[in-house]
Length: 369
Image (cartoon, rainbow, N blue to C red; front, side, top):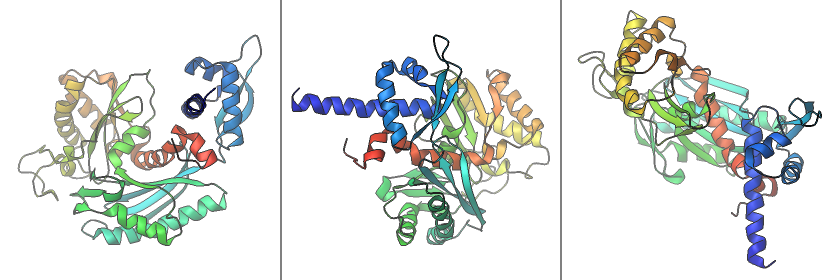
């Protein structure tokens, strides 16, 4: 075998490690035989890859269970609960917070610090996040859990690359705020400068975190958010393009309530709790505006997330009725399972995504492709 063949074989094994770990992470106590069937890899190959993931602290064997062949129960595999964690951070108009998320997507240590963020400079928001980050780093270290990454969820439009991230958020009063650079500086002071940090739109993270109960190819329109409202099209756990975070600033009631963006009657303010005296009216406003986005995409599901998840049955019924008038079957409209927790859970999962995609790099410390 020449050098190029050896390199190609190594790359293939590296790819297969990510493929197998992905099956464990997204499955439910899956067996080696189940992974082989799902990936098309041979059982001997799967067994060798699982051995590496077990040794690397990413997978745990929890013993025999159903699903084996020839009368023998298969041994079940789950993400190692003592494995790496993602640090999720969040900024909203009423405070800052964060949590640790493990490879199985479970939220662990959690912090929330109430604060009036709207109208404050991004520098102050970054400083407000510093104690949250410090406490989460201590919680991870105390449990001997290595931090794989930090992802900050923000309410607004995120543009630029990791080094030049800019956030525009009418709800916070920010226009092209360099919050990523500011938070990175706070992390550096806490000794966490070597941990990768990214800033992403909270609405997109929430949409990607929502459990996917459909078959491969299932499409979901997710509408949600707290400070801002965003709508996201998701297919197979991945958002298709950017979240439409300006969606909340479409006018739902001309001449209505004043919005921080300068207009009046924007969907984001008209559907805030308490603005409308009747939740059915808020539901109808959301349904009418959402129908323009949803009807052309013909999604398999419409998920009402964020502030809408707990808006009550009258609100959900009003949204459903409006969407049904535009051709969306009523049984496709459902409240979010995660609610306002979704953006944080999504941020933690996003922080762990590089580990799941390339466990070889995590295990060996070798980032080279």
